[in-house]
Length: 173
Image 1 (cartoon, rainbow, N blue to C red):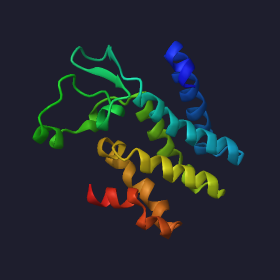
Image 2: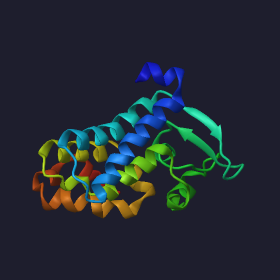
Image 3: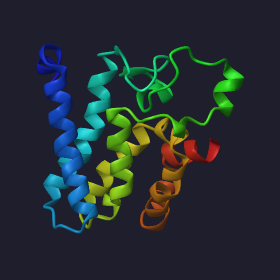
Image 4: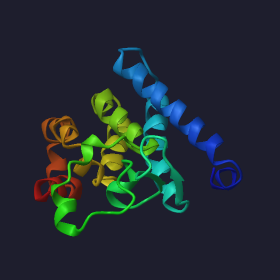
């Protein structure tokens, strides 16, 4: 996937986005999924962020001339189209990033949380879900509304997860 990404970023982005969003939407709508398809959709969300970390691309956005799309950025920039010139540290803390449009990875993570696929009855799927959301904790800084739907199954079903670093990071945030 890395090699194809270098040649045709839009092809990889489109394929990964389409497969994961279609699968997560199907589950959210109550359609039956095989466990390996559910796990693959979650894994694609995970790996999408990993491959984009190495491929930072700045593109002008048609939304506003002062907003850039930063694919593969770090922190909040990986998940939303933030201002081209980042505000100072104090202003960054008070800025409501949920008002900015999501990047492709942000859209995929939002769909992942909203699908409630963490309740899938196969342990491998729920483990992959928790691994993915733990890996991208900065997403929850821009989408606070996703914290509770993520924590509820983590604490409710998997009491073991209350000691997971992701859970502890969310409490600190």
